[in-house]
Length: 241
Image (cartoon, rainbow, N blue to C red; front, side):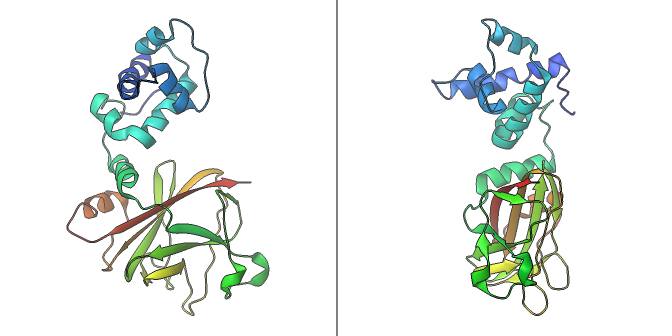
């Protein structure tokens, strides 16, 4: 069932999750946990906790809290309130990323538009936490293995596979060390660009010694739990106009 931020019954189911999180931190209350979820302090009257228990809270605060719980505490939220946090392949994928993805080995390299297809490493610069829409870039992976890799781009938990290989298929060959993807058959960088929407975009590279890496999330979440060597690399970047 989808979460309806106008439904008091749905909103009331947020409270026991926030209470469980507050119980884990003596410095927190359910109201302060909601502040964390919303991203800034919200007005709390003396009856605010009672209103939260009844689901009598602003629909925008409720939606932001629901989204925050999905991204940061899905396992707990699903266990306490499965009606508004149903277990789906996408949610299991999110939980697996949160628990197992490697940070710091995947970066975005800016590809200058004035140079055509970049051939010199010195022309590349690492992007910070933002990237302009339309700006050319490539993914740089510092891999621990030789093998194969796929890349996924996620926006609001909607995931799509990128064309990494020289033949524009999904699975690319990688080497131990620095890899810049995607590439043309000549080995030169084949730059990517994003034209929308603005907001937070996530990139994941899944690598393995073998080529048979699934490209759909519902298959990937089964595959990563199997008896196979795999490496998941994750990073986020904010796209701005």
